Image (tube, rainbow, N blue to C red; front, side, top):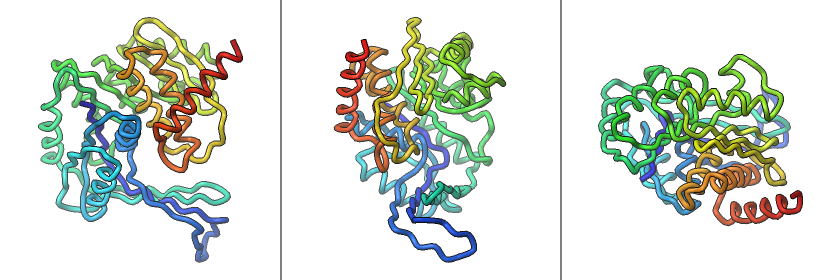
Amino acid sequence: MIYTVTFNPALDYVVRMKELTLGQVNRTQHEEIYPGGKGINVSVVLKNLGFGSRALGFTAGFTGKQIQRMVEAFGCETDFIDIPNGLSRINVKMKAEKETEINGQGPEITQNDICILYEKLEQLRGDDILVLAGSIPNTLPADIYEIILKRLSDKKIRSVVDATGDLLLNVLKYRPFLIKPNNHELGEIFDTELYSKDEIVFYAKKLQQLGARNVLISMAGEGAVLLDETGGVHHSLPPEGKVVNSVGAGDSMVAGFLAGYLEKQDYEYAFQMGLCTGSASAFSEWLAVREDVLKLMKKYEKEREEKS
């Protein structure tokens, strides 16, 4: 079983308008509401690709109940921890001539809530995969990722960590199966700016030396780089297409990589599926579906054959 953890889920309220004028009443042209959070995105895309998962995390109030209903409506299992006080956040994403976001804070998470999460994670076994993704609210310990992987270190589960800075660096000693910083986050970790693929590979290898088994670096329009645990280095530009919405593309890449690896146990194939799944989400109003991913996989293979 694949488990995802979203510490601060949200309802993403997406509104589209011609222009946003501060200080005046603005009217939308179109609006949508989606369940939000990096772990939730991974769960939804995995389900779209034919792989089940169980979404964990903390929810509160009527917004939390709606998050759970919507995630389950997408076919995902949920086991959220219901916090008795406060509300799960609502993030407002305004798309006009420029994109503007207002993200809520979310409920206060107590030590008792955290202990309930620990108890749920204790049920994981060696064949399971745990995805820890995204930032953490300020009511949680700053080293919560490290605490979780330390507690699970004797279970030999495969962990996936999509985080930044010390949150990522501090878990490398627990040999995560996959980490996925983007190229800017990779540069920030080593306090440098990265301008070429060779520089990205050089610093990604440093993360492997620190313990990461597979390092997947997303590079937006420049594609991605994967350093796998067998010593392979994979790099490709993304499939061509019009970017409609970049939110969730990185999470989709993680889900696609996992789906590809579980399907064929092959890192090159997993890399291709991760790249195409991330692109399929970027080319969509929301998150990738399998049909679009497979179309991009065929297109990707054709483009590579023509270039070779």
